[in-house]
Length: 83
Image 1: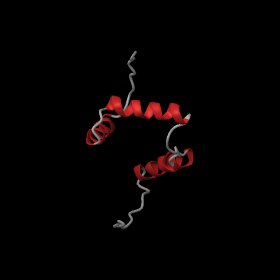
Image 2: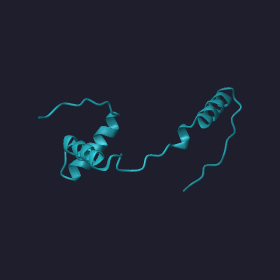
Image 3: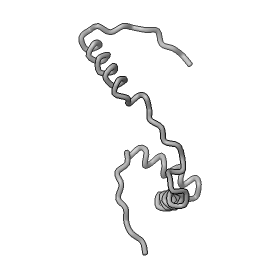
Image 4: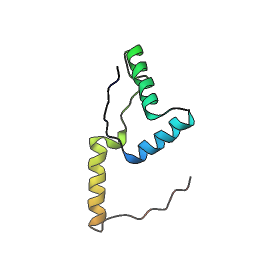
């Protein structure tokens, strides 16, 4: 017996992941079914999940302060760093 799951995902991410799955010969349903079966078999998410320090409260506060400084004309111009 099958059931339907509805999830929300960023449109660009959806398109990108569909392309990767297609390259693997899979569709979104097959890929998520593989993921779910692996979660059940392993009893955990099958990869490490870590936090992104960019989204930390301290960094977000610093970014908001920097934006406010820029909007108040207190910004500094720096040379671009080329990779």
